[in-house]
Length: 167
Image (cartoon, rainbow, N blue to C red; front, side, top):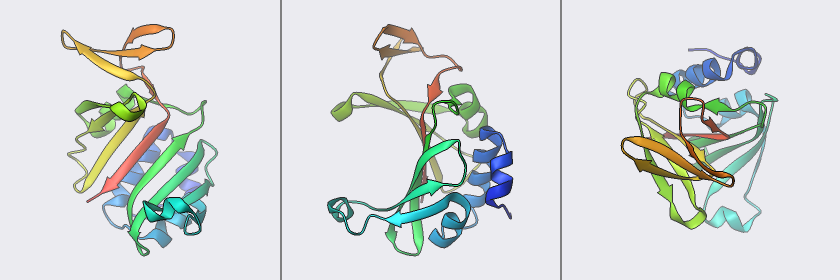
């Protein structure tokens, strides 16, 4: 599959991530991803680099605030994290259509939650979206503990970041 950054910018976010998931099945090349995503600066000169190696990308697509391209080998990407602008968020319904069933996992150290999608149509890809809030399950329904109180998580629930991990 051939895609370029101009084509991706014309896609809806749902089309963008579908195309990117298909493309990720063909390559994990850092050079290819940088050509698509934008200009990146390695974190080699930081303390963080001892724990995680990444390029911090200034995206060519204005729907994203920043993109992290994580790697262990300088030639191959391990994962990509997109941080979306507030006016360009993904919904749970869109992610379910793209990547199928999901499970949730609460992250104790920062009181957020992760939605892990099975992505069965995209072998070798793990997809995760993160919520800023703790998620509880009661009677088969999900609830988000937000600042203004608890709300039910429906297909309109929004995410500000999306994570692709390659394995």
